[in-house]
Picture 1 (tube, each protein chain N blue to C red):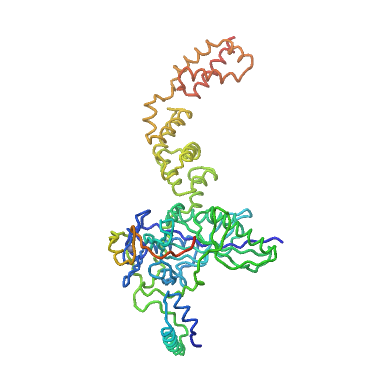
Picture 2 (picture 1 turned 90 degrees about the horizontal axis):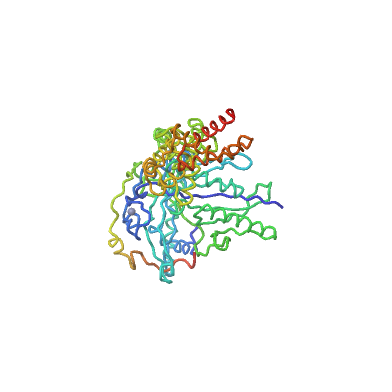
Length: 484
Length: 97
Ligand SMILES: [Zn+2]
């Protein structure tokens, strides 16, 4: 029997705000424990949360971009459970009236484009962080840091429309790209900006019934999600093939053993007793406000790709690569503004410069070469000041030192010789010095042209303009043919 | 249908409350009186009335996204029964993650 996986994904994206969602504590990466906290995010009695407008607008932006319907009146609710990293004993979240609902995200699959439905998009606060036992040097205790408590999270919940690990990966890539281009989240995986929970079940191919669902929590990278879901699908299919049944449970992913394992907590069954948060007033979202947000939605990756093809004459493949992230697209467009050779700039970015970035594990945001410098380099090639070969060397130097190409070129005396009379003189000399080779060339060994050009380059220390040298060598040799 | 002793114990567990015999009996009785009152409210015709999510005639109260200085840590930790190295220390909560 062939089984079909049924996968749903919940994504928590940390929103790009300067302050927390219900208090004015700054959102910072890696501060000493409990140093970016206040009585509100520590849940002291009697404090009042006040909603951060930016966090709400970023969630709205996400909901709109995911083609959601928007609730014109939305409220916050308390999700009640007891855990030390949740200081109030409840998390402020949304359940009954989320900001956005019934949306979709389109992905590319092997069998064409497909819409994955979005159940809802809502706003909630992050919890604190606990370090347990030996990790903190005390096996009998846990240690709590509330720096993350109250950091705004946008939660995106998909419907169980995903039917393979490939589709799941496409969905994650597409969603991350969307969040990046919307500028709502930095999406830095290593900082936990995107966290996932997957629900997985399997059913006989061709049926519509839903199998027993297993949830996998605490997945913090694309690789963990794919690995965990793949392993869980295989585990469930193996169980069913043995005639056993799948238990409904919550699992964790064990990266080392590549297996999903039941979560070992004595947590009482989910009984969150949601009720409206009396400390926050309802949010009314008018049509005017929505229209304003719609108007200021940044260009999506797909729109940008099309524009790059249309405006810059790039191939679709080039345009796709140059719009993979906002950073690479921004780099490209800045460079093109400095010197208008989109093809040339695109080629250098996707070729040598991308290679240098990979070698040093940097990205377009941390690239030591500025867009302006790259534009200058391409200009130096276009106006034949330097050859492509020299440019590769100059780029390497620019990458290592961050200096401008013109400075490097003049310091190293790299300027190529495009002076016809001078190069012609060298060509004549080279030809006179190699009579045998000349004879061989004239008797039909055309390939010897490369040898002569090589000699000219050698005699000029690599500085002769190669196209020029090539042309002059050919002219000189051909003139021998007619004169002989 | 009255609230049972088991349900009261479940609610107590969710709230991490430890109740003695006398309290279990008292709360079972009190909670049932509250529920009876709620039952009475059910007699009202509320067809077409949206659930109230807030009693104040207010909406859209926001703060701008401007961070301020966080609180001094020692002040925040001052009330903690147990704190060490800037952390709250609590009895260990998970066996293994
Ligand atoms: Zn705070």
